[in-house]
Length: 134
Image 1: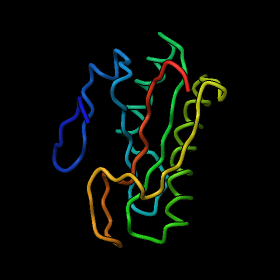
Image 2 (image 1 turned 60 degrees about the vertical axis):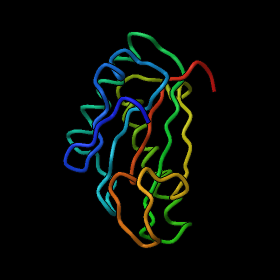
Image 3 (image 1 turned 180 degrees about the vertical axis):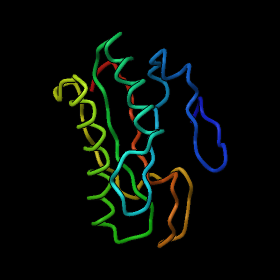
């Protein structure tokens, strides 16, 4: 992945990549284990993306992911719920639902490879991409 650094175990997306809305890399929001609330950092990221959309509307992909700390089925469901939380935030801030596509990957595409049963915050994420089309 490009345009990111790890700082104290948390991925930070390069501000320029988000602000300019480059389609080459996603923005990330992360979730605490077993929780579906947005953190202050996550809402700040989403607010930046709302502004980016207002400047240049276009299709948005919202991909939910989970870690490997639970069974496959519930992990898939939680990854979808996380993506829907991001979508709902965007809708509440004026982005039409029709501009977004929500996808869920569960534990299938980790950032950090772990053994089954391991909690890893960087894998409990939503990736958001501005794309030309979907």
